[in-house]
Image 1 (cartoon, rainbow, N blue to C red):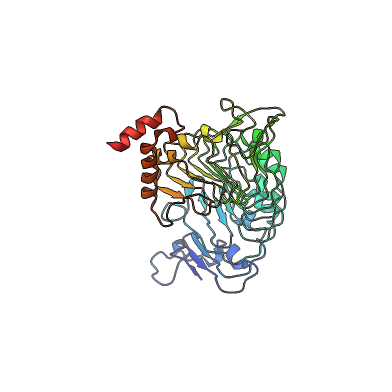
Image 2: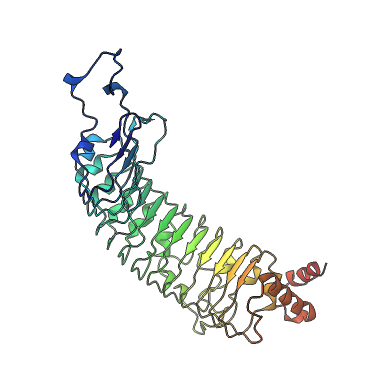
Length: 416
């Protein structure tokens, strides 16, 4: 039902496979039927009707969008036909048509089956947010690449197998969600999205990411998710045309549940030992990957035994998840992370916990269970109690400390 005063349309729970023509016709007025008697108090006059601001089409089975969308709603700025919610806002120039002056959420659309978009969709030149998540797309509809104003694109939960190189045309995009699809690769043109801040690629079939050189072109990238894929190397392509890259704004990196054995594929020394935390493909002073702003690094359930010098490049790290890997000792650089608050090393091959962990004053959560630790701490012991016991060990035998300079100072402070 459409409320002429509320601007809301509800067509939910009607087993619809198409949006009815009545929706596309609702702004068409029969000029012969216009009543210009402004003194009349009966009924809803045409001039009292406000424009659509909320459109509820939940629990239908909508399969396609009519080409009329490019004729009737050219001012559309946000369009969402995902499994959960649809947004819609009409504008005339820069002014929202809705009575409140702001764009409004325009409707939950659950359980739809959209597999394509009409060519006319590309005429919606003002669209900034497009959500077609959890539908039945097998490719990225070509009209999307004509939406030059687009800054958010939600395509999660479809069946998309590849990304068209034309994606590089969406130069204003800031948020791209391609998670839960069937992707096996990405084009190098992904590096042309220079305004991209969030990239979500989790739960696909990716065996490799674009080269680190391509990804490093995304200088505004703040959050990157590629969990639950088939990656074996996190950052690849070294030793070809470049030897190191920097991600200057990246603060969240999630690569959990892959098959990663190495952080980078830079050439390894002849005596490389994957079980030695200090063995690496590069020196500490010239690491291949620099992550100066990183706050959260999630690498759980991979096959890592070393991080190389990576931790030396992210001094402000707050969360480090290494659960379910193959570490036989604490990764190089970890004991220098003075802002580290959460550390998960459960389910590795650690024979002991280094006493120096007790010097990490910001550490409040330490998960260690599932390692073959000799004289393991009592299960259920709080992190505070565990860290205190580690500090006590250092106080009793300062020779255990392998950290230069900060160790003695920290021990003195802990005794005060």
